[in-house]
Amino acid sequence: MEIEKNLYDAVIVGGGPAGLSAAIYLARAKYRVLIVAKDGTGGQISITSEVVNYPGIEKISGKELTASMRRQAENFGAEFVTGEVLHMELEKEIKEIKTTRGDYKALGVVLATGANPRKIGFKGEREFQGRGVAYCATCDGEFFTGKKVFVIGGGFAAVEEAIFLTRYAREVTILVRGDSFSCAKSVSDQLENYDKIDVKFHTELVEADGDQLVTRAEFYNNQTKETWEYEAGADGNFGIFVFAGYVPNTEWIGPEVEKNEQGYLLTDSNQKTNLDGVYAAGDVCVKQLRQVVTAVSDGASAATALEKAAAELHTKLNLPDLVQEKTAETAVEDEAPNLQENGFFDASIYRQLKPVFRKFEQKVKIRAWLDDQPISGEIRGFLRELTSMTDQVTWEEAKGSESREPMLPAMELCYENGQSSGIWFHGVPGGHEFNSFVAALYNTAGPGQEISTELEERIRKIDQPVNIKVLVSLSCTMCPELVMASQKAAAVSDKIEAEMFDLMHYPELKEKYQVMSVPCMIINDKDVYFGKKNLEELTGILEGE
Image 1: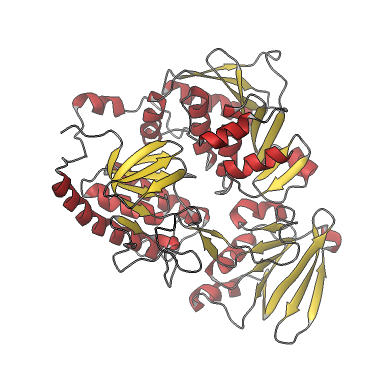
Image 2: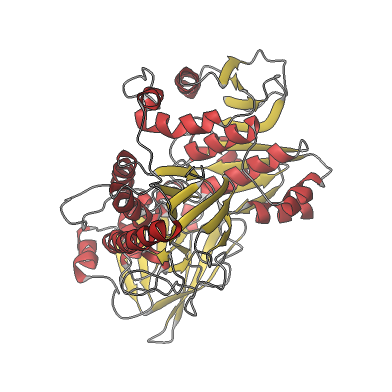
């Protein structure tokens, strides 16, 4: 019986610890496994600087931990794609999953989509997001170097992020609504080691205010019923970091999968949802403790239960094993070229890129606009390594008169004939932005990431030139979604130009637009927006311009 190319034993939606754990267990059991992750792998834990409570590992960064998990999964044969799930048919025996990277079928699905930071609704929260109000210390802490910051929340995340912020802030004050922290005492006890940190219990933030940046805030003591204010004074402005829990990323999941009132997925002890063959794992589930150790436990439980369900379907539907043994020919194809030691790419990344390159409908030419800055040298090295791995991508240095003069340095993605795609990267697309760079190559080469016909038509109807600048930090997990959305819009419409800037190398943009949080999006050098946005949300903004 011939095996369908896009048929998997399991498709895992989400690339955090829960999804990676499920992939490791399933792939090790010789099942064909695909992980679909919108922003690449890692999840929320990847922005945690120190993980010290994972059994058997005394100290490790979240990024290192999840990178190790991914390597394990890949070594067992799991496959990965970076893309967004658009629609799922989950009530059939063979599930159908439609994504921006194509359509897949699976005998079972694991939903491990995690959760997003919760907004708490104080006056000024929305107005000053990105101008003093932030939700990620790793992404935005550096913007508050030498300044006062308030941290809202009494849980593990609030304590951990407050400690991280002491690297930058002059002073950190944690505001807790109750009379104690909600995390383990061993965690909150660490605060005693930091003179910069002050804690105020029974305290709530009422309002944040200012001109363009947050310069004033009003607070309320819910025990004494008194209010008090803080003004920035000589600091010019200050920061408010909100760590008041999370909202499950389930809005896009249909009503056929049962949820509680808060949107968390309901599962049994084996992580099975109400649908046969559909499981959930990690922070997206109803559970008492949301930690990396419980996420990997959920993933393992879901995987072992799915193994049994998949085996039964193999028998019922007379399906052969979906995992194919590598031939000598394919093994040679998987061998990486001679990559530089400590370079930008390694054998693992090469294996991820190889199937993407195979799908290209045309070659991509990268025009590099360089100067004498050190980052230009890094871009040269990046492009040399990239083009050594494939003949589908070439590069050349710009001569200065081939296109409009960009802010330097920059990489301009062009079609094979040299015409600009309208997609630009200013800086080396490392960290979380590497996935958006790969998606940009794919969109330029074609066929590109799939979107709905209705959304594509809306983008094509935009009849005025639009320039979109997305200012990012490479450590930001919320930035790639907006970068990929803007670049997909540019790939669809020749009226749209999309530029990514690594803000570290372009401080003049930070000052010009008074950026205190990423991602920051500027439309036509005028209108400024903060926070992650998908293509649907971005299109709505462009239609209103």
